[in-house]
Amino acid sequence: MNTGFQGLPISEVVPDAVAGMQEGLSKSSLLVSRRKIRFQPQTGTSATPGSIVQFVLADSSSLLDVNSATISFTITTSTAGSAAAPVALDDGASWCRRIQASLNGNLVSDVDHAHRLANMEVYSSADKAWYQSAGSFGGWWKFNPDLATGVYPTGTAAPMAGNYNPAYGDIASDAVATGTAGGTWFSAGTRHAAGENRIVPLSLLDGFFRCKQYVPLNLLGELVVSFTLASNQEAILTLSDTSATYTMTDIFMEVDVVQPHYALNEIMLKQANSEGENGIVIPYESAVVSQGQALTSGTSSVIVSRATNNLRRCLYAQQLTSGLSLYTFPSVSCFGFNATSNWQVRCGSLYFPSQPSTTASRMYGLLTSSYGEAVNDKPGIMNRLTYTMTSATIATTPLKLVYSDNFIVGYNFDAYKNTAGTNVLDADGLSVLGMAGSQVVFQVTQTGSVSPVVSLHATRYLSLLNGTLKIVGV
Image 1 (cartoon, rainbow, N blue to C red):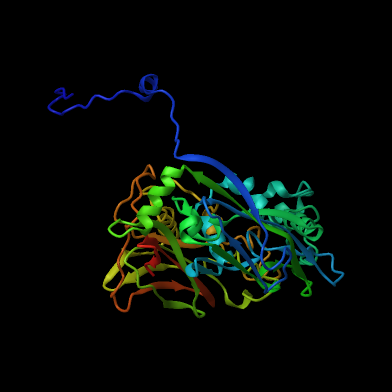
Image 2 (image 1 turned 90 degrees about the vertical axis):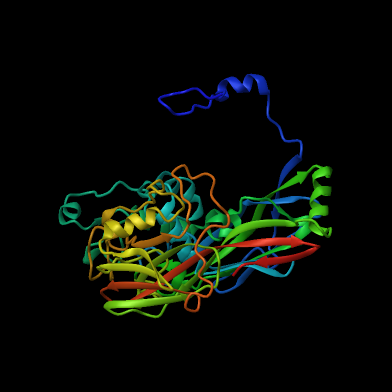
């Protein structure tokens, strides 16, 4: 019904609170039941650094809700040394170097540097309340002072000197060897030495497990998920004991499966196997992560290739090159600013943004809009101090925020964005296929010797047509 309103048409609607009286209750009879299944790894329920943990998921009649997939385990650090300094695992999923997923023998996703990417994603887009609550059960502790078992600072010397660190305690040079007893890092070391049980959603490690649709295992075959465990030097942060190691025990994966109505199952079978049908297409996010060669002070170009028609977004971070394989540097959670004064992405002859970002605030603005919305709706956990922090070593940089570096830049290539975060298009993004060898070039001006970590996120598709499964997209 249209009514003139200052020359503009008006459409009358029935408010939900009233419409519900007429429509009755809502129900989906196409889904019969849901149950959670626990899978044991084919490689055994315990693992050590560098080994592979592999799961095989199969079901003859159900739909797999990949959003529900989690891996749970107990992780324990140990050391042969006698130093008083804590031996703690680095922040987040520092144990997971690589995650791979395959369907019916087809490689669906392969995420190297999964621990670094998980921290980049969490620091960039997670809600701080989630990080400090549910995130603590997944291994995130560094920016969670509530996990400290003591109340610090205990005196006035440390805070007056500016050396009290929320994560590490009093980090003045004379306290480096032991940290502050009861501080967040010290408490994490105590928990990890005793054995900390964790549960990590796989959606934090791999975009495939953020897929919006259920995966019909009865049609696509078995799903194989493999984890490659990180080395001790990557996974552990300790300042004095380089003999530390870690082990994982009681490893299991849990996931929900949904039983469809037999009529729905028949329809899916017909769509997937009969000629003349459109088939089943499931879009999902796929990330390619690479660690580039070390950059020196000045303007550098980091080149990554991905021949895709649906490049959705990218993330960029940089780390101290000399700290990547050290026990004494948080190599999966510390992303230094290094006085970055210029950042831009080039794809062929196109530049994003059109003018280089020349301040930390502008770079942060790009990051907050890189998750599909036009405004800052996903703030992450960094602030202007941690975003512009550059750490070397605690012994040489006794500052309040040392090792809390959160410098991450991102860019979203979607043509359509909306502030509500709804109606996200599956086949959006930038086509870089044929653009100068499908290269994405990051142009960065910074100071210091750093190694860049770059991720390119694109949409890929599971296509089941005429009884054949194909992975469409690169």
